Length: 179
Length: 396
Image 1: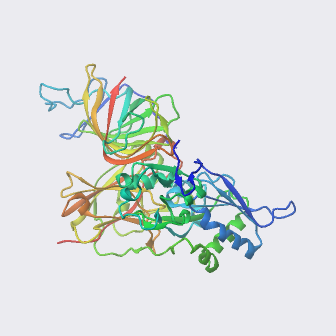
Image 2: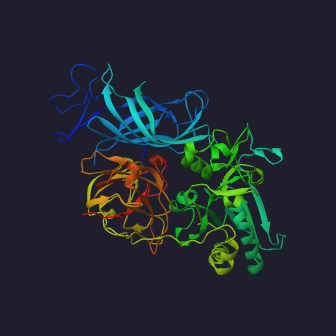
Image 3: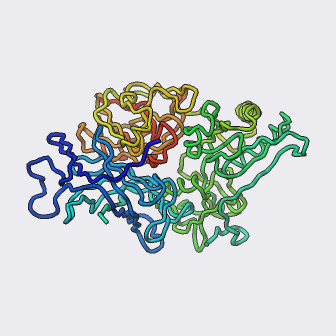
């Protein structure tokens, strides 16, 4: 059985140019231009600690309970370096694995699976069951922490419990923001 | 809660229905009944078979109608592939005893003479009544926007049969007109529970169900198993791995993580003990392997790519690209991957480049679609288990 990892205050980034893996307290980067230009948030940032995960259903799904966005308090930590650096994000103060993201982190992009073992109560109230793959660019917030402001999500997002509304789509979305 | 509208009006809606029906003597001096657990879809299929088994063997049986995962105190579990994946892979049921009983199709039940279009058919205030639980959820997710907005789930077999409009496995269909639901059939699988109180009785029942008498009784609802597609279609197999990834958590827990195992023809084998396999790669939570087919796979008539996946029907997502660096285009998302392959341990699922709008591709990313949380993993084979990848139409 795999073990739950504790969050570490490490920053982790992967550069395609030099396959550079950095584990440092400072922000991510392997030197040279970060490609972001002077406007807009810089890529990278520290990916660890407390986050809020928001899952948003595709517009093609039936509306349920007047909301399409569902929030969860999560804890993020670095998870492995081979074959690529990884990030693990788990539901805070809950059974490990009740809601879990296992994500590859390369080129300032997080990509991987969000899965729940059962229905999970969202901050908005409705129960959520998810089995989906997310992809999102990581940028720095004003405190240098990494966040995903607009990620795509493809897979199953069911709202409302076992007999609730399942919706499989390629255009769900998600955000991961520091809290 | 809204309810299914039936021929008699509104019927009571029910959640999970648990029924225990015993066949044969249950007197204090008699033998304890052999306990069989099966979900609602398979209960009508099994009842006459269990009665026949009891008459033939003298062994009383009890049918416990509820989801077979976990198996509880059952001796034998019966369910769809998707219901038994974790029971079999986790060792709660003995994979070595598992047998296919047959295919159970989904049907749409409508009043005779209803319009062909389902939205038009479910007119007025009526609702489409759909089997609840996991199987119904998967069916509703697969049909998505094809379903009318007014849908109500139920796990009450009587209510489902009374519904004027229903989406159900054939075993739960009422007297209306049955139409093809456009869904893959359920695959009825039976297996002895590893901690069965009566393992000999369990084996005897499985032998009966797969024997001529059992098959004849089951044949009222089930189409024969073993009618899977032949494994040797045209085209070659993946020749090289160009990329792969699975989470550290999965790498720590899974025993089969060598991506080279997906190359070449299907050769996965179950070694006869829990988590004992050769010839496959378990992808873990959301992991993937990207392969080079060695030549362009061309969009032809019908499917163009076959993925061989071991044990049950864990879902697989496939992306395609012209170069190893991509960009990769989604071909299909989370396809249940367990269509039986004649003569092989692995099942398979097929993909059509047409679905991605591609005319050809050489590189394919095969991604886990189960996405089960790694931290709750109960096996050493988490994620879809990839045996091989085959081109079905090979270009020059």
